Image 1 (cartoon, rainbow, N blue to C red):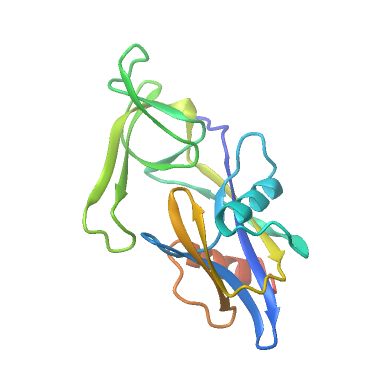
Image 2 (spheres, helix red, strand yellow):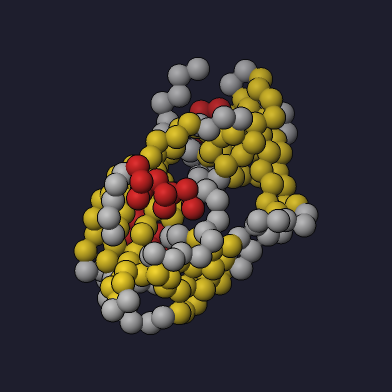
Length: 209
């Protein structure tokens, strides 16, 4: 089936300069490891607007010396879908059946089966990542295929900061994040697949911070 929808994602590489070299801003998620500021582009946003919004929401920083577009990475999911528009979850592949949940734009779901213009899919949230102990929350049901996509276009931006604070807390998406700077030449272990984004930007896009 032809899939016209492409979900936009934005990732921010926020750096600052120190005598010891360039440092990259990361955050420690209480349940999901060390990450880069990143998120979904809303339907009424440009990629750059989304990058700046995500940077502010996840770091609290709003002023930057400069913003540079690095490049993009286009991917197609296999066996998975990502919510393109907020998707109602139905009990059966029928719009007249009960709708008891809704999954927001940008969430990845696993395909279970198809029937007509519907896909039965499952979303599971684990207690922590990586190395989960159990599934904390799960939704399985039928969604209209037109509200899903398998195509993602991730755009990378480099934001330069003069922030002098070395570590701070920021509340985002119902979690308290710990922001910190790390030497670009000696980064800590960043969660998958974000660790691959760092390699992609440096080696494939040949971007020098």
